[in-house]
Length: 117
Figure 1: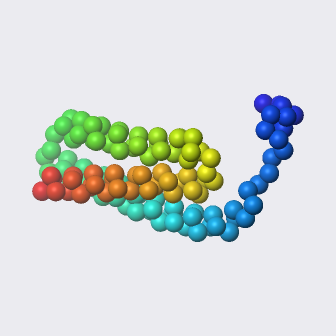
Figure 2 (figure 1 turned 60 degrees about the vertical axis):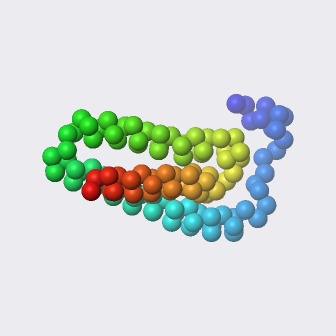
Figure 3 (figure 1 turned 30 degrees about the vertical axis):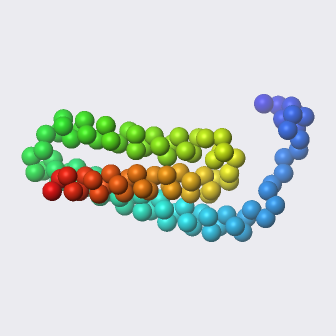
């Protein structure tokens, strides 16, 4: 888009006042949340690997992974793409998506651990 057209339509660009200091804490919180999500995903990958070593059918494990993994990944992506979240700053978007992803993946990991025995 032409910069003059954007200025004419939306007005001159300006930064949000005072957003820098508060976003640091939000970025740290988002990092912590996503670190926990990554640890849970590593646990799920390790569990899948151990099930394959134990003689679980690779096709059955793949079907389970697709059935439960795709919706689990889709929910945080949909949350991050909603118009209300897109208006937030980037650290706040990551925190919102992480807050949606953490209980889903944590529940999935707990269910998979219990069902695997």
